[in-house]
Image 1 (cartoon, rainbow, N blue to C red):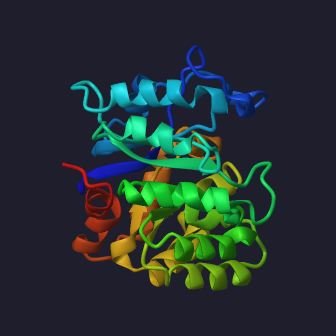
Image 2 (cartoon, rainbow, N blue to C red):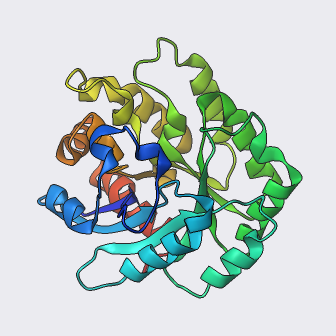
Amino acid sequence: MIPIIDTHQHLWDLNILQLNWVRGAGELGKNHIMSDYLREAQGLNIARTIYMEVDALESQHEVEAEYVLDLCGRPDSPMAAAVVGGRPDDYRFKEYIDKLAHSPYFKGVRQVLHGNTKRCYSLSGEFLRGLQALGDLRLRFDLCMRPEDLTDALTVCRECPDTLFVLDHCGNASVQSPDLNHWKKDIEALAKAPNIICKISGVVSTAKRGEWSAADLEPIISHCVQVFGHDRVMFGSDWPVCTTTATLHEWVAALQQIVCSWSETNQRKLFYDNAVRFYELN
């Protein structure tokens, strides 16, 4: 089996972090810690993981960073790196990332942009300066946004040419959307920016539980691979959010089915090699 680096692993201990968004979210509204993930990932040959921030309260960003950076590199943990929460438009943002930059496990920052943020939120001068500060430190920013905001992502990439970006969840296209043409055009335009890579994640979470197949996920995934190319895509589980519609095994198996006709080299790029290169893993 090709080894897997899971580039989008969430974890949360609600005794440490307060997550308002999980209230009333069913099974997501409980602790999801490393032992839970390892139990569900058993047999998948997941060699390493990269933590993805969990939209904690802004006041808890430093707590979150300390918590996950401590998990990285432990002999009993596959976590090899972390992308932590942050607000690029905060006047203290540069001080915040400078403080974390001493850790070799700190790889980037994410702020979820599809929640309460307004259109063009990411295009403010303060926000762009924060993203540029990440680039000065060879760090990354994950773009998690509404499909209709993908043109903003292209502007961000152009305004911050020295910053590396990750498009989360294939641009949040839904398998239930009756028309993907607009999304396809915007993704194709965004893929022309040289400083962004696409994460093949989140797609299964847009399906209906018990009513999806690999064929339903394939059009979104194949289009992303077509426009970004095999060197700029990588797998992320989005665990445990993916479990709202599929087990971790079901999601991985569906993706493996979709890419089974690829060469072994290209499959390895998706599941392992691109993540090693992009995140500069040892």
